[in-house]
Structures are given as structure tokens and as C-alpha cells.
Image 1 (cartoon, helix red, strand yellow):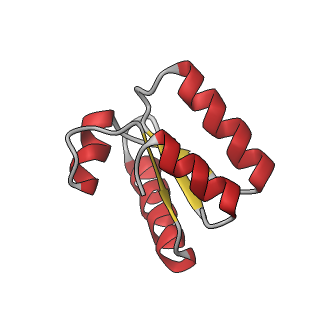
Image 2 (cartoon, helix red, strand yellow):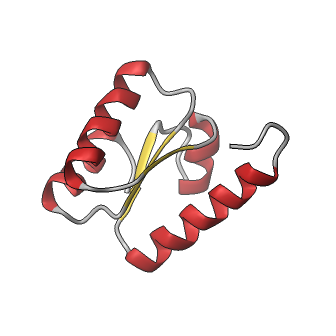
Length: 91
């Protein structure tokens, strides 16, 4: 699910299992999702750029997306953390 409004709904409904926010999202967007995800006990990962996240989801650009499947969320989180750990500069 992509977009701020959709991700907020998924968090409120208890369906979100992982929130991914682009690194170039506004500070307000980052803070909003950090606070909401913390409140609902959902992990947040900051990854890529808006264009990159959009491309992964078939959109032109998006600053936020959420994953609602436990297994898929775990695999995405592991893949991103592994990718970031292996990149120059680490996480």
C-alpha cells in the first residue's frame, strides 16, 4: 500500500506490519510516520528516494509505503538491512 493516507489507515487499522519511508521525504513526513509507527508498534525503515520507491510499486514517486503481510514484511526488512549493511558507509 502506498501513499501517506493509505499508510496511515493501515497503521490505524492494525494491518500494517512494516512502514518504509523514502530518505528524501520531508522532515514532517518522517516524523509523522516515526511517531505513528512507534505508537502502533510497527517497524519503520528509511530507504531510497521517492522515485525509487515509486518504481518499486509501479508509481512515478511515493514517499511512503506499508506492507501488510507478516512474511513479506520480514523478507523486505531483512533484504533492506542486508543491502544497507553491505553498502559503503553501512546503515
